[in-house]
Image (cartoon, rainbow, N blue to C red; front, side, top):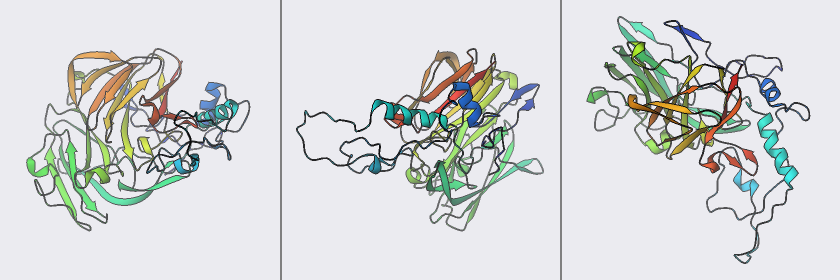
Length: 390
């Protein structure tokens, strides 16, 4: 993945450049244009002491507590290394940390300073298509990839085209679509077009609507996107799904309206794919904090966020500083948009919400199930920021 140099020589934005659609400037994806770690830290006034990118956990700093049964690496934190067994003690005995308040604060600060931390790989970018007559042709390859979800933390991911999330498929109501899926995985798979109204034979459920796509085989899906099916949708495996999807076989499928005036206007947009499981424990767009990417806006802009939950748990996404206006659920416009600062997103659900960026500053944006976002070692997992500039 190409990295662009910024003033500090380190930048991994990958943000799609603004594009004009009917005179409206939009910026799509999960990454941010022009915010390097140095620039972000400068906004927070954190550059005076220490080096940007300091490790999250200094050696020798540990909390003494009983490890949970079956504890595993989660959210970029090595739980086995963070905990150690202690002799049996009365139930009422208090747990005493071995680090001071200053040491804990230093770990929290170091994580913020390293954000956004560069990692290899960037998912969720638009997938180019070819035209075959009046049909848009997309190609997906299911393959194993070593995916870096946090600095120095890699896992074997099951991916579409080598990235997590898979490439974003973007079409318009009425488009004829063909998607060729090649399987290079060690087991069979299939692709379900979650939220899309398609013929039953194209629904992607093995032994109900199609045979499984066995290793080495290719299957072709073809359908016309119906009018009235605009909005935020998903695609993912529907074969051994609890394992294949949480390991990375997931992506966004956005259907733009044939008439842009039929949906609320916005100035730029971002997609946020929520996931929990092998990819970092808790992740946003395939990355765990501090490797998540911040979102950018200019004061006064209306920013559309497309949320989709591809995980196994509910994730209430909370934005500091400004309300969100929820305008659509599962692709369908709400008859009564409503304002909130925390939007509860269950597995399989998609929400569209608009933020009117009225408040300049850097605003935390995270899952409000707090152990998905922060620990004594600092922020991790489902945490990012919205930066509103004058």
